[in-house]
Length: 308
Ligand SMILES: C[S@@+](CC[C@H](N)C(=O)[O-])C[C@H]1O[C@@H](n2cnc3c(N)ncnc32)[C@H](O)[C@@H]1O
Image 1 (tube, protein in one colour):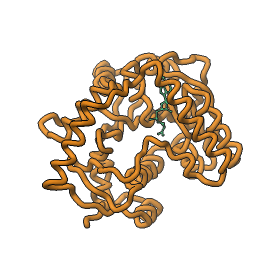
Image 2 (cartoon, helix red, strand yellow):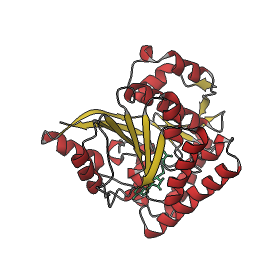
Image 3 (cartoon, protein in one colour):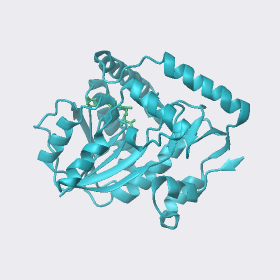
Image 4 (cartoon, protein in one colour):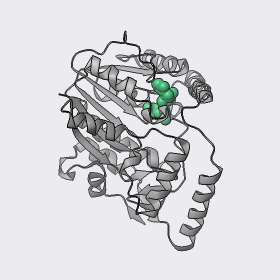
């Protein structure tokens, strides 16, 4: 068995492992990130499974019926949370599937811990929040789902104020219930990326984040960027799948690229931001593919930018 090392995480996040905090290292030491490479016949079988999925999957991102799917999905988490408010597992989004092969630095791995994807993501989020949230008073997450990122942010920074939003009311209710239950400086309201509400306030000294949410709007991100242009948060951090970062001469990447394309996840965001940077309107502070993902694609690439 191999084990993900601090050096691997530093390579994945694009940081120096000597800079990891004690808290981060303690968290790292408390989780099982053992794995082995999937090889030979097992890899052949996995490729067949992936190709079958590429043909059979018929989910269409951003389609009309997807609104109901999100409303219902977060409604189930809301009911689970209301009936078991002390069980925070009710806030784990159901799209994180335990026990499946993981994409790691362009290879497939089999992990000892069925919750590997979640645990790896949590380490990334710990690093991300330590690095980027500390300088801002007002933290926003758009398309926040169950609010489990916001809850973690509130716990890490008790003095800051947190604002969630989503385009379905079950998410908004759930996040407001979490705030009430844990007595947090957290509130949530409805907000649709595609039809931004310009009455929505972004306060001074603020950070805006998205996690796997702009992916859902079928490339219609311009209204949201226009909204940000008007509101001028101090910094924007996205953790999203980015089609343009796959290497198309790598077979594993190519399968992820095809899946991203077939489902119709957002594309073009990074090139659009790069155009804005060329026009001197924004500054891109970081673009980092984590080289980490799930069976069919990689959902984790960090883009950090700000208006000039
Ligand atoms: C994959 S989930 C990610 C949720 C959360 N950010 C997380 O990391 O767990 C995608 C989220 O985007 C939201 N979403 C989809 N379309 C949206 C839109 N047009 N405006 C705002 N949110 C949207 C969904 O309701 C869902 O909460």
